[in-house]
Amino acid sequence: MEYETYNDLVRHPFILSLLKDAALISNEVTKNKGFSVVNEYKRLPTEKEFYCLQLGHCISHLLIVIQQMEHTVLYMGNFSPTDIMKNAGITRYTHLLWSVENYIVRTQTVYDRLLIVIDRLFNLHNSPSCISHEMIVTNSHIKRTKIPALLKPVKNSVKKYYHDRNTIIHQHSFLDDELNTIEAYSILSAAEDEGEKMGVSYKKALKQSVKDFLKTRKREFTRINKNVCTSMTPLLNEIKKTYAKQYKKF
Image 1 (cartoon, rainbow, N blue to C red):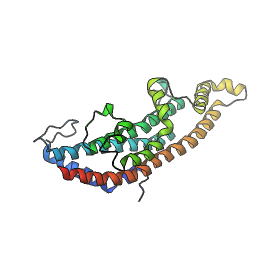
Image 2 (cartoon, helix red, strand yellow; image 1 turned 120 degrees about the vertical axis):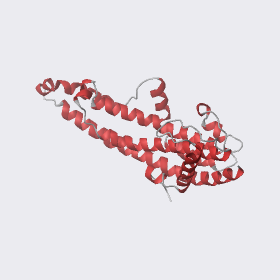
Image 3 (cartoon, helix red, strand yellow; image 1 turned 30 degrees about the vertical axis):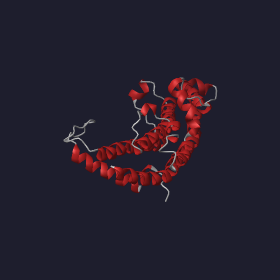
Image 4 (cartoon, rainbow, N blue to C red; image 1 turned 45 degrees about the horizontal axis):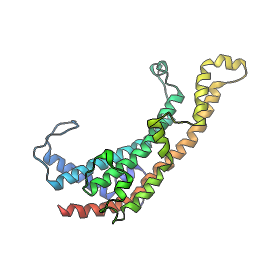
């Protein structure tokens, strides 16, 4: 069975089983602190319990990114600016740029968090800031398994935006001809009266540009989201087997 969406993945047998176990252990070993980010322990968890808690934590935060990627497709298509937003300078262009850049960053975040899951699966506990693809696939314990080969399709599903993500984080905003056109029409539509005198309707041009942009990007992002989930399916099946073996070692 292939899991094509976030809602599918949260129903994967491994994820259901792991999160259920982690929740039971959490109730057993932590004090009830309501919605506190950091819980106090009633007792220190055993090594086996800690292993389950850590893996459950990492899996849940991997799923959050996948859900956010899917939500971006919806956010992009919905824009109802209030007067406060307008006064703050939020336009259709700035809203789309914000949505696209956040999506691009998350396409790489999802793979980074997946690597952390693999690190915790094998109980390595490297610092998240040091974990990389090469570190994981060349690890002597991991490379003897099917996991390096199964990671590759997931990595490929988001590789298109690898360099764009680094550019956005370290250099400048995402550059795109269609977005540039939308920015220009957003600015010009503020002077609609002048445009109409010249026989040009900037608001209509802006509306059409946005429509064309959304049609292309929403289709592309939806395809990437599906590829992320489907490529992760065989990996989760293998992780389930590895988890069972690791769990028995404690």
